[in-house]
Length: 87
Image (cartoon, rainbow, N blue to C red; front, side, top):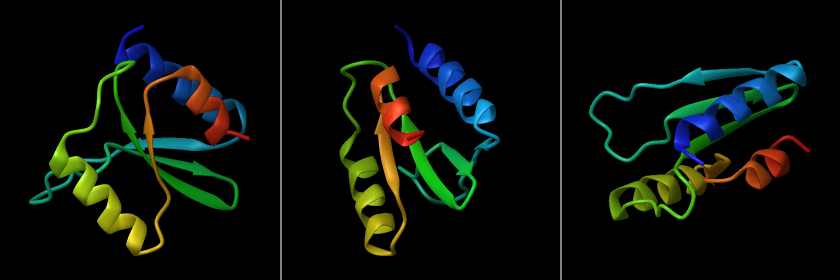
C-alpha cells in the first residue's frame, strides 16, 4: 500500500464522519505534520507515511514539540491507525 492510498482512505473516512481534512503547508517549519483532521469537537494533526516508513528525526522533534503544547499528533502509516483516529 502506498502513502497516497492511506491518504485517500483517511480523507474519505473523515468526510463520512462529517469531518474535514486540510493539507497544511508550513513556512519556515521543517518536520511539521502535513494534514489537519477536523472531526466534530476535536482536531488531530497527521503525518502520513507509507507502511513501515519511519518519521525522520526532525519530524519526531517537531511532533514532540507540538504534543508538549497540547496538540494531538499521529503518525499514520496504515488503515488501522486511520480507524483508531476516527473512533
